[in-house]
Amino acid sequence: MIKGSCLCGEVKYAISGEMNDITHCHCTSCRKAHGAAFSSVSAVPIKHFHILSGEKLLKSYESSPNKRRYFCSNCGSQIYAHRDPQEHYIVRLGTLDDDPKVRPTNHIWVSLKAPWYDIEHDGKLKKFETWPDKRS
Ligand SMILES: [Zn+2]
Ligand SMILES: [Zn+2]
Image (cartoon, rainbow, N blue to C red; front, side, top):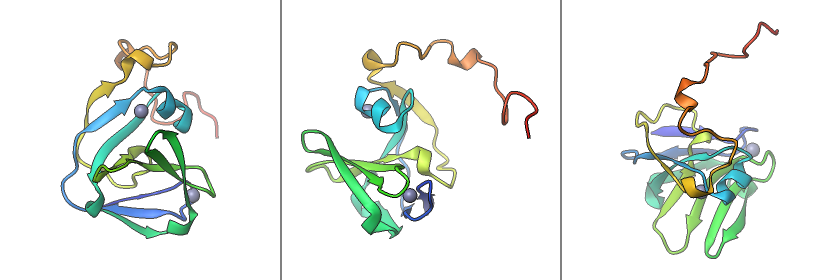
């Protein structure tokens, strides 16, 4: 089981079975929903996705026809999206607490990516384990 939770910790979930590939999605609705350059997602069969607590806090928004994005109404964390009648959820992997052991394989909807996000050069950016300076 791979576990995840929302920012406030009220919504907790677990994923059973093998994890599918991880995709970074740059579409406009992912960027807006997550407030980020892209969202990192993976398809999980509905029968492998288990809400452990906080289900009543989940609210959803229909971001495109028949596609609803589910989020914690207390803290705003996006947990998963579901397009009817697909039999899988698109889980928002930023909410994972465990290492899913699979790694990202692709970027999608690059045609809609944020103009300020330099997809070609990101691997060359400086990297810091925490903040870039010694703040406390
Ligand atoms: Zn929450
Ligand atoms: Zn997207």
